[in-house]
Length: 212
Ligand code: DC
Image (cartoon, rainbow, N blue to C red):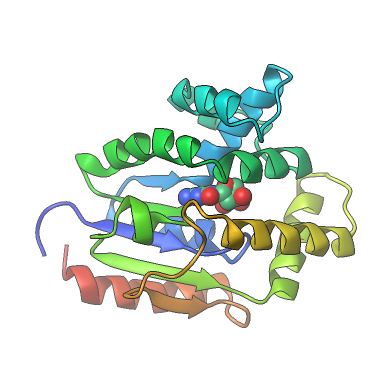
């Protein structure tokens, strides 16, 4: 294919999407956007003002006033940011406010984007769609490891419980629930290391977009 390829990568938390998406983008020479950061930054903006991330009016205003520099904040990870992001992400007006940001990002040069609704809502015509999953136990283990590496104290059982609740919230919400696009390539990374996941994904994407 010619033009600006858009590669959509969706799936639940800690399935390996980010690592994979970043590497695919580097390999293909495409810009990369971690769309979870948009919801995290919007949630943080609400917390900054002492507001409730579940309040649609406040959350929409935060999403509309988001600046690219908000994505570089160093407080977008951790349980508080996780919960605030999940709350704002379930509000339709927030999702609508962040749609243009995501489309504009990929407009000029194409992109690799990872999130929950990239292949279903944001770019339903993306040339290549992947749905990346792993078992809950494995995803919780990976997230726990990340938190520890970042110097945060965490119990693996708590991480798993939080993750189960957040998965349920992402899948149950009426606004863009997490689900695979019908034409997505499904990649279960439970038993794959990052290298094996990359090889499987790049073979699929190259098959879709052809040589670049
Ligand atoms: O991928 P993440 O954990 O950084 O995402 C943070 C939250 O935002 C999570 O609750 C899922 C939600 N999200 C979303 O609803 N849609 C996206 N495209 C990306 C993230």
